[in-house]
Each structure stands twice: as C-alpha cells, then as structure tokens.
Image 1 (tube, rainbow, N blue to C red):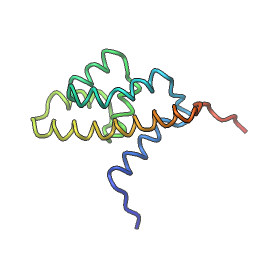
Image 2: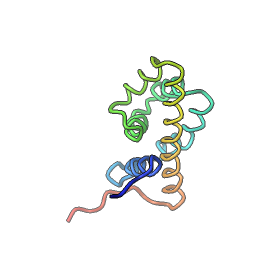
Image 3: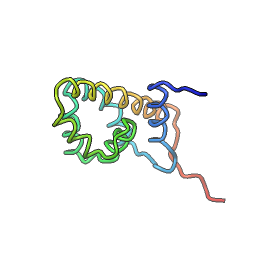
Image 4: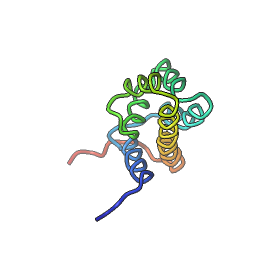
Length: 121
C-alpha cells in the first residue's frame, strides 16, 4: 500500500499544470511566481478577485484543480461565503497549492524548458 502526503499530492497536481500539452506561456509563469505572495498579503478573496479582474482564468483553473475544487468560480464563491475559521484554512491550502505551482514555474523557467507538444508518430 502506497501512501502519499498532502504535499506529494499537491506536487503531483501542480506538475500537471506544466505538461507539454498545456503550452504554458511566460505571462502564466510570471503570474504563478507572484500569486503566493499576493495570497499571503491580501488573503484569498482579494487575490482571487484580482486574478479574475486580470483575466487569469487558466491560472485559477489550475489552482482550483490542485486544491481539489471543481471550478475556479466555486473557489471565488467559497472565499467570499465561508466563516472565518474555514476561510483561514482554505487560504492556507491555497497558499500551499500556489507555492507548488510557483515552484514548477520557476523550475521550468530556470532549466530553459520549452513547452512544446511532442511530434505525433
């Protein structure tokens, strides 16, 4: 029986955000690198509202996926409607998940990895 930690699950889901089929652009990487700090300083509700205003749907979709939430709109609604204790827990989870996405954004950028779709055989 193989057991995985929450961090390992987050890392695996975040790794999927940078698959070659997604062809992640530089704009996505830059936003991914800044978003955990935005979450930490502003909180989840304000950070999600900012991302929605800046039309960062792809990033919010990935964050929701890593957080195991079906839809990024649900993430925005949750962040505005839950009580304080649950808001703090969800914000902490969002910071952890956003940090994993940031790590992969930095790693693929530093290695000079080009996000190209492999040729079909």
